[in-house]
Image (cartoon, rainbow, N blue to C red; front, side, top):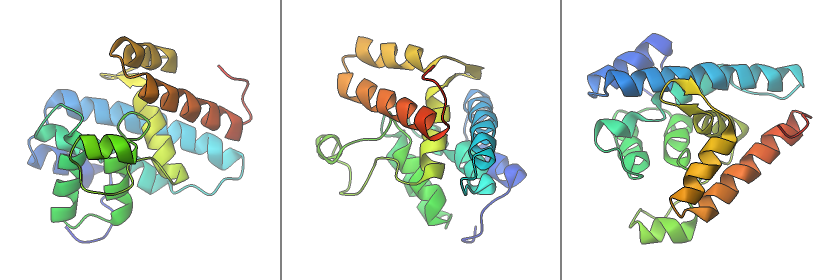
Length: 177
């Protein structure tokens, strides 16, 4: 693939080509649907958001699950996306979507290459947040994800999800829900 942004059909084909399961693909489609809804809310508030990037990034965020279902799927997905020549913006969404980001210290403990693994752009944050609000292909309250992270003794990650939730709600001028 070139550095051109794949469209929806190309992104789904890309997941299939890389042996992602139907379960992963339907999850990615559900995340894309929610991410696009959030992006439309941001657009309505006059934020500049790239809808095509959000849709494709959300569809490809779990590309690495074709290799592993551990936290390392972010790195595996990043490697696949880079090898295929996908745009850097897609690579960043893939590598930064886990938890609500992985700190430099956590990345070092995981033996990941030195890099930034926390969502930076609004598009990255939207995809990451949408992923935290979808389990399988069902929408869930972000509190469920936060509780699961606490139950897994991942309190720092739970706190990052909470902060991302608060940031999204603040930007959208929502009452915290």
